[in-house]
Amino acid sequence: MKITKAAVNTTSPGRNFVTLKVETDEGIYGLGDGTLNGRELAVASYLTEHVIPCIVGRDPFETEDIWQYLYRGAYWRRGPVTMSAIAAVDVALWDIKGKALGTPVYNLLGGKSRDGVLVYGHANGKDTETALEDVARHVEQGFKAVRVQSGIPGIKTTYGIAKGAGRYEPAERGLPSEAEWSTEHYLRHAPKLFEKVRERFGEELHLLHDCHHRLTPIEAARLGKELESFHLFWMEDPTTAELQEGFKVIREHTTTPIAVGEVFSSVWDAHDLIRNQWIDYLRMTIVHGGGFTALKKAADFAAMYHVRTGFHGATDLSPVTMAAALHFDTAIHNFGIQELMPHNEETDAVFPHQYYFKDGMMYPGDGPGLGVDLDEKLAAKYEYQRAYLPVNRKLDGTLTDW
Ligand code: KDG
Ligand code: MG
Image (cartoon, rainbow, N blue to C red; front, side, top):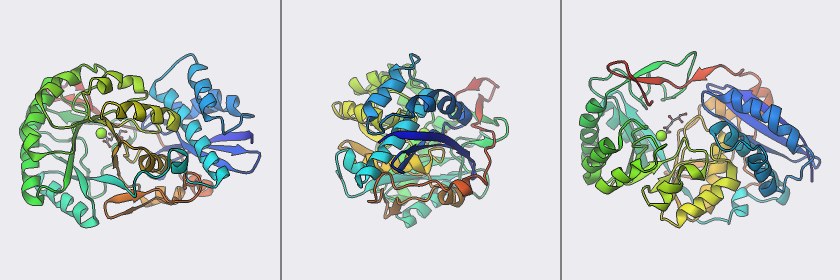
């Protein structure tokens, strides 16, 4: 089998997506996601200008060699743009393999290790009470695990909270908006929020929380300690992770489990975190981490240190990545949990898919390949629109991590 053609599709059914379609001489095609929120066209151009010309004529079954060719062959390694482009190719090729062999991708990754994939949904509200109401809605929908974020008294805007009646969506069209931050206000508020959630919903519901990289290690240690009695499933991105040793400080002070990695693009970003057992869950997912070929190795390495996966699954990861993640989650042994932030109806229509949600779990479907498609005619109706994630400032105006 030979790759005959590959092309990038950009579409914006409510938010931007970059999809690679790889075609073969046997009429089988595969899809890969290359979406990098707020920097989409960098990946699109990397693929079109630098990657596609090198893969035409290659055998799509040679995923390992093609991965190494794109990674080592570029000389310039790692980084989210490069790794998302490599992931788009890798995932498309695994999709082709599955279709050619007439089997779901999870069978190529080791077969089913579980019946379903535990997912967590996002509950949020402008204050504690509205956040609690949203937790109740998630419980009614069948979720067994819920991430809880709420507005913080004394700060006008905060991460993870829907602005109007609709769902929360991090990227916004136009230039970056500015959000406000105060660690002092947040640290006073967050433990009270979780006290209320446990009081109302009891012990059984899995609770998660995203600090979104805003604390220093010692501040995160304080939060982790104060949250201990509420038994969180995890505290996510407690601090920025360029300095991996920062997590040692957190770890030494608290038993609250730690998840990190949605902005990572290589196992090397997590090497010290994993081998020193400073984290419990790795969030680097298929699209930003270089595809199945790279993630399988990262997950196997993590397994040796009791680290499980907890893949990023926000709306900026397209249905192609959601499908890919669900096949991966189904197959690997050290799966922990999968994030689910449902896409809007327009996106679901552009990317028809087999995966589905039932009783707090998700299932990838049993058709060949990834079980997700791209309706190119419909996609063409939604032109790419420049969009950015917000930037964040402390109350005195200092730019800080969003
Ligand atoms: O593109 C950035 C979003 O995906 C991110 O802000 C969402 O932190 C996030 C999460 O945990 O889903
Ligand atoms: Mg996050």
